[in-house]
Image 1 (cartoon, protein in one colour):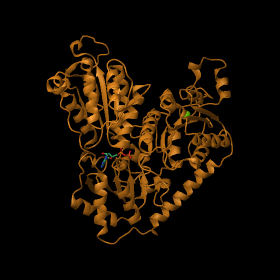
Image 2 (tube, helix red, strand yellow):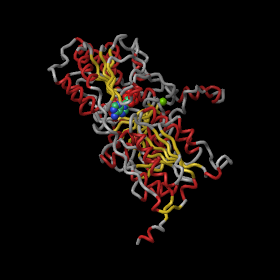
Image 3 (tube, protein in one colour):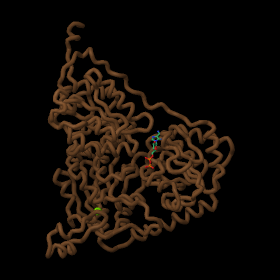
Image 4 (cartoon, rainbow, N blue to C red):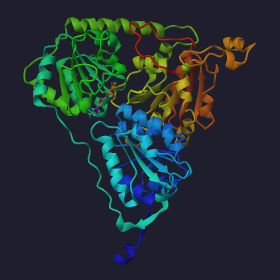
Length: 574
Ligand code: ADP
Ligand code: MG
């Protein structure tokens, strides 16, 4: 009866959990401790999935990948002070990638503030630099309001990270149930379209292009624009180039994909349409010598401030990529036209693709041992399931791997991204695995790691085994960051001197048996040195759907990528 109900109390932890549930949060990644344990338990009781990780940084990477993969933010739940600080890396990475994310941090008790409380830190201020929105609810009653606002801010406009601070004393505080009003689930972002006149101009610039190029970025993947962009490519026979995470929006093996002639395509295109890709370091800022000085850029983006960055665009199309692409299709459809398949431009691109592909095939066919990168990736590609997720990080491992490993589906590649972050791999793989288990069971997550990159979050292998996730880790092991040494050189080096005096900073312990990290937790581990061993271990890993695996692949410690026309991606790390 009503009199009884009005007496009913609810804890702050339960209010937080219910507010998250109401906002359709499906997954929380975190590490529990004072004061957030009760929040995790309350959330799990409401049916929100909780994945306990081993470091907040990896937890935050995982939560951010949920946002990219599902269009609603994943939550990263952390304790106060150091817990929150560990999560900053994930927040920065999410914000740089324009991925939605919600971090919830416990913080010290309000009545101990400025007194040197346990793990006290100015968390709301600290997060400001890494987020679009950072706030602490003023009362338990305000929690649903602030959580709705954080979820909404994370997905509206340019997506990004948000932070909500929860003082420890909120967690167990009891309030009357009737005093809490839950906000309605925030709607998906409103769809905005570009100005009609700009669409007309863009269509005419495309029609008049001599050497057109479409660049498909991860913004297009996030916008679910695969259907409209594929139509644009095919209907008008336009060459396209995916950015690293734009791979798969249109399949890599599509005849109009010019990924294998990347530098050539960028350098000589006279009209470039950018679908959700910024002209940052990854695209060489849109400037000569990597581009023609008078190349006409057509920028499609949801963020007005992005338009005009580094170049003066010929046309700007502000809006949702899928909606804007449909506008473009409609406009182009008005006059029959297609880009001539026999053009000199297509010929140039096809020739360059052929010679680049031949060069990497030749490297791949080398029989010498230890193997080189190309040999490894060609053998992996042969067995890669078409619908798998590819997660990758490491310098050469990621850069060479990207050119050989194919993506056929959108949002199925996750890597170091805009921020060039090493250490994201295992968190991303775990996120992809929990999403795949729920939405597309049977899909594998193939996580291709350099040995250095693997080290950043190697203990997450325990997380992978605890939840028995469908992940195959490939550690491409060259005993170092960029390059390493073989065992003999190593021994020679240490003969007369202490390791700290002589071991080059890029060296890691040669011949490390990373596969034993996996076997330590009950997964399967393989140590492979030959193409045959690689083929066999990968076949076995893919055949056994009951366990995760780690294949430790020894390669030539001094192996590099093939000669480049331009020194493209320079990284400071692995
Ligand atoms: P890449 O690394 O693939 O080049 P970027 O991260 O540089 O991609 O660029 C992605 C762009 O996509 C960002 O500028 C972002 O504002 C934009 N974006 C994100 N979501 C949408 C959307 N739904 N519609 C249009 N643009 C979007
Ligand atoms: Mg290495």
